[in-house]
Length: 262
Image 1 (cartoon, one colour):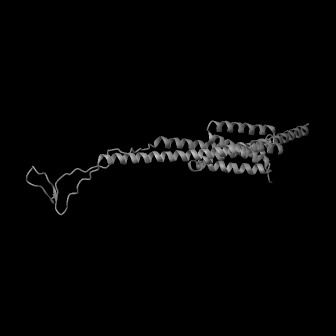
Image 2 (image 1 turned 60 degrees about the vertical axis):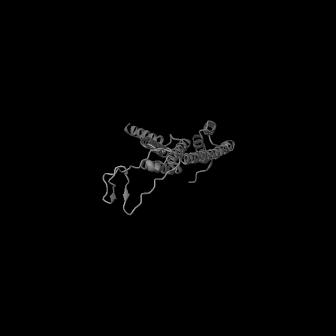
């Protein structure tokens, strides 16, 4: 009887060990977790988290490397867990960057200089006494001051018409500079929009490529959903959000269509 009980307990522990060593996590779930962690790490890098949150960024990269190694050795449970840690550390780093950026933007107070302002910021020193080398005539009717060995320079007189013309030129130069900056920004936006349109046009090709690679239907539908969200963001003018979704799609397509080398 005792021997039967011992054998039953041994079998029970064996089954618990068998079903608890990573079998509950499928290959698709582990790979999806790793890809999501890659996206989170990439977003944190784009936000300069390596500069503003180096500790969390290093932890995210370390967990990411260990998760990829575990996935390559078919350790799905470990890969899934490490990927979750990497994603959490990357998001924490990105949030820390946002907090620091908000503090800096609130503390900074830009100073704007208006052309043509008549007030001068240079202090003028008032005379406190008459130097010994200045001769003052005895008569009060002629308050003339002479410096020995030097001649007093004549005050510079600028006609009001020239001052107005100079102000108009400065204002015209400022307007021209603003127009040039707007033209450059418009050109950048146009090129960015063209790149997004080109990537969105590859949807059918990428979907067919995933179907040929026998990718699960749920994953293909998820990629289709991201394509739709990217198109909506681009139509509304949110090109940065659209490009982030496109980059995520590219990573998924590459991950599911490229065979893993062991």
